[in-house]
Image 1 (cartoon, rainbow, N blue to C red):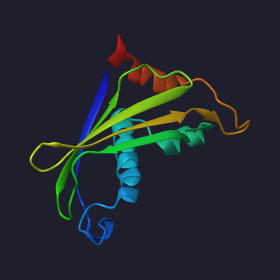
Image 2 (cartoon, rainbow, N blue to C red):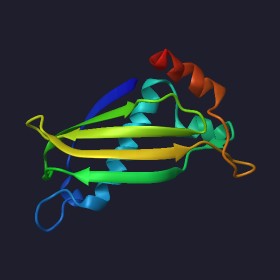
Image 3 (cartoon, one colour):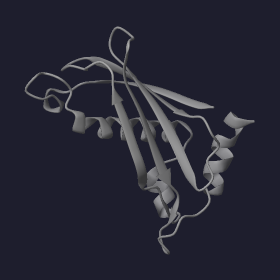
Amino acid sequence: MFTHQIKFRVLYSDTDKMGYMYYGQYAKYLEMGRVEAMRSLNLSYKSMEESGVMMPVLNLNVKYIKPLFYDDEVTLVTKVFKMPDTRIHFQYDLLNPRGELSTIAETTLVFVDCESGKPCLIPSNFKTKIEPYFS
């Protein structure tokens, strides 16, 4: 299993009239978790796209358990439980400043050949870097 963790602070612009982090903002933070998890493996969307592979989101599921508020420092844990093939499945835990589980989420992304627009296997450099976490 591959796991990566970051912290971020809820911005004022990300909250609604009730002072809660607006539900529509969660996808942005999940992407940040994915991007930083990939970066920790020396991978990036930019380099993948330059090599001819995109990773569009196929599915997004979010379960809100406890609200997050303006200026909360949030711990975002990003996990990959299964070795990717043509898809990669990320799971996320968002913890509030007290360490309580606030939100759980999942995204599934598909490796897509930029030229054909069709699904493809995980790029070899990505596979090489993530495979040790599953052996």
